[in-house]
Image (tube, one colour):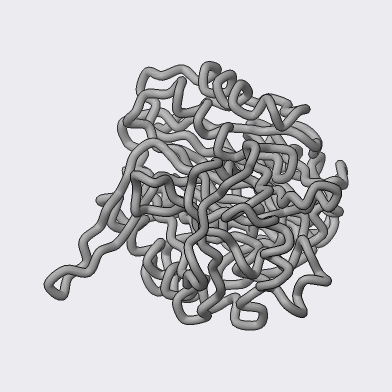
Length: 390
């Protein structure tokens, strides 16, 4: 596997950041950039001209990642040339959030299953129920196939997101890549690092991804109470206080972030399901634990593959970027410390992350790694996909 990474200044002016020797024909190009730049068709034309045989996949972001830098308002392309791995691509439009499950099913059906190793997803970031979409994908894929990826971003505007799927950037689009072959190795890790606070509350009224009441009280009013001075900046400020939810039969929670409010009926809209009957607890930032969470995600992604990674795709939630601010590159630097200088980094800040459930336990002075298969939908995590060919 050979790689080439470029930072585009204009459609005609670019800087090759890193290129492997003997890089020849690209088969896949990942493109991450601001909504404004990724919507400029001239950039896509230039990238397609440079890599005429490659499949292009990418999205608008809430910040771009390359090397150990976090940048805004740029366009980064990462071209991949495989030696023996083949890929298959599928795309669907999601025009109604209620169709999230069905679209997940349709996308998974489009991928042939023989020798399928892994599925990578780039999705619309707002008009989707991430939990239902993943359920649909899992329903149509073999249980041992892992899925990773993320939802497109739009800075902290939450207006519209765009996805590239071998075409000009479009809203309401989802693209998936299937990786095939015996020589591809995929690792993954996803960790958060947020602290719970306040009482655990029962979700007493919700519908799909809209939360209305906890313990019989308005969810929106509860958030306003806890947010204090931040309440005037809703819904963006709610990213600073995500929600950990769990079923009554599980002690393992998943994190949900809100992206909008329905003020007319005191509802909060989340990117994933917030099922009625689940228990919920507010969370707040702990700087050191967020950075440590990124480090653990890197350890998991490294542990889950036998060989050293050549490429790491880092997808981190925009809420982490809002909290860490000028310290944001610390969470990228600790990943570099784990994965090494030879691993190329690409990625972006997102509105949601996709990965199997992963966890690290500390027992008798040693780390114990828990790596799930399949997939879960996450918010507020650092999610890493590592790739290499052997």
